[in-house]
Image (cartoon, rainbow, N blue to C red; front, side, top):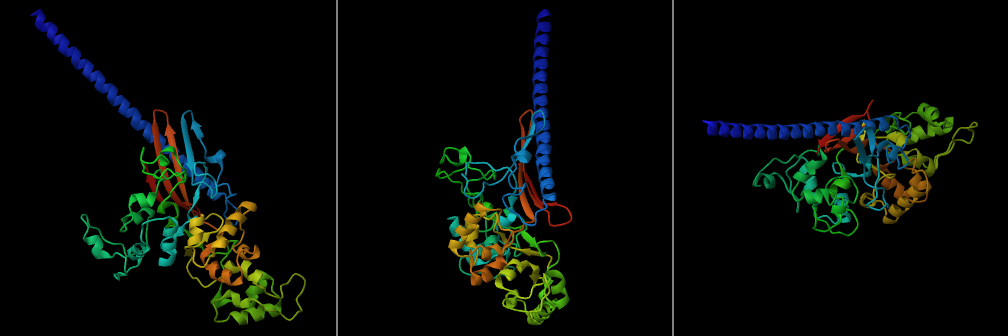
Length: 423
């Protein structure tokens, strides 16, 4: 009998030990889950900080000197409480070492909008990246028809896949949708920057030793994800936020009020623009020489270049596809139609010497483009941005770590989120 009791006590002891171990594991899992939830909210605090910076950015143009671009005090290792911290990082500035750090937001208008450009520009961009992706397959995905030029891919290709899906035949709605296009693998899309922090990390410069695979050349291949966008646009407004003058509705009174034209010049300009949609037709126009003090009585090319965005033939509230010359990377600038290669180097050099371009007219007044070149390039560029990408990593005590990637649109009355991804 005593032996049975001893055995029962021993079995009971094992049961108690097992329950205790299970309780410890459950507690550890609970603490880990709690740490992840806490880290998620800390990362969200980084996104909220980005909202604040964008909401209080009052400059009329966007460039690398803005607080949203690089502000370690606002975005680097911000501690909310003991052990609760967030970092908001972005790709390093053009010309800086790839293993450096930038703490701020990424301008979507620094990228090429794949919904707005044709085969030639997208092909040039892919060539600049040494990418194996095909521009025609990107266009076929969005173009709304079933025509298949050489090298393209339409509905039949996607229907014949092992796991088939429908082609969109509509503009891209999210950035990662590009990975559904024929030939665009995750490796081509993300490049070596799989964590999307825009910085050359150790494992992204060690060959095949650690994932991802890389060429260990000391530079970061950011893939298509680093130079393309589906969200960027510019509001159809002037630099001061007012509606531009519509070409088909210009009158002398508007020109006098807004630009201080003399009576004679205003009448001549209104007559010249009747039925026209080309602001450059105003170049060389003169009044009668009887302008009052402070009035403009002659229009030269410099005036037109600096006021290019004060006129429009667009009726939509937003204009997609314009690249911000203050923030775009070399690969994007080199892919812009009609922009000479030597002008790209001049733009990058000018950005380092001053406060950025305050108007696109600076491309002409800085002697980067001549008159003919400016006419061709002006419809493709801007100095203003409305959509920004935020990469916020939050950590919490207990090992919690969550990274949030969000795309924010500040073009309305207040910033809103267009895209949200957590990992």
